[in-house]
Amino acid sequence: MKKIIYFFSLIGLAVGFAGCNKILDQWKPGGGQKKQCSITKIVQTRNYPFGSDTRTGLFYYGPNNRLDSVAFDLQGGTGRAQFYYWTYDKNNRLIGYRSEYARGFYEWRHKYVWKNDKIVTDSAWLQGAGLDTFVIDNFKYDNKGRVIAETKRQVYPNQNRPDEPAEIIKYMYNEDGNLIYGQFGEIQNNYDVNVLSYISTNPAMQFVFRDFSKNSAYGAIGINAAGLPLGFENNYGLGIFGWGDPKTIEYNCR
Image 1 (spheres, helix red, strand yellow):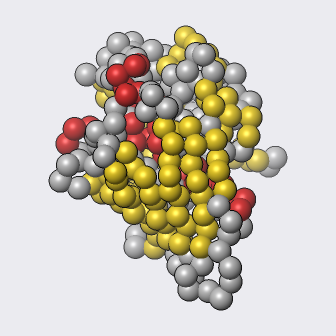
Image 2 (spheres, one colour):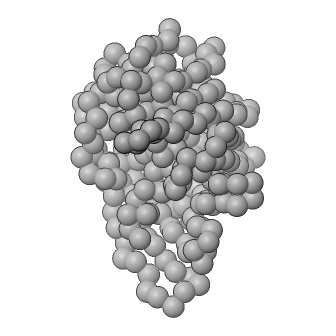
């Protein structure tokens, strides 16, 4: 069960940093790019010994460049839903998130609780598993607004079984501002300091994937005028939505 939790936690959380933008203060809007860009489309590939899968995702935004939804043309397999949705309160703070394999059949559904300018609790429900409630609380942030620790606790409100003990996950960054230790332990990615992180284009994605890195991994096939990658030669990076770094990335830059 813990391995499942670890995997889904990479894709199962999202947040808008309406009141907590220290990471953007340091790297400037969008992670230090010369222009502010938002991802509009990605193409993901996953390779097998006897072939590969490819899917395309479109990104949709609301006011203040908040990420409202991402829709793929097909499901990506277990842990890789087809649709992703975010909801916000009147203060433009993210209060809900869900991922769906099909319309109306969600995989994970999240409710966020804020205190001051930060999310402090995430309550998550997994459909088809007795509505187990997985609670993440007591997020710890550094002075740049990056999550550096979180407490995870799996509880079973509808089942006759004991709750899981709390577990603390830590995150570490190097002097270049790139993630070197995360949920699965040491990060093997080698970062390219000449290419900015495409995840940094939106603070919601930074939190979703627990990756506030300044740079992307090596392997970019090109960069745009803002210093962002246009895609990657391989999909071995941390990636987004359950797969590795996208094959192609399209942006809207202002």
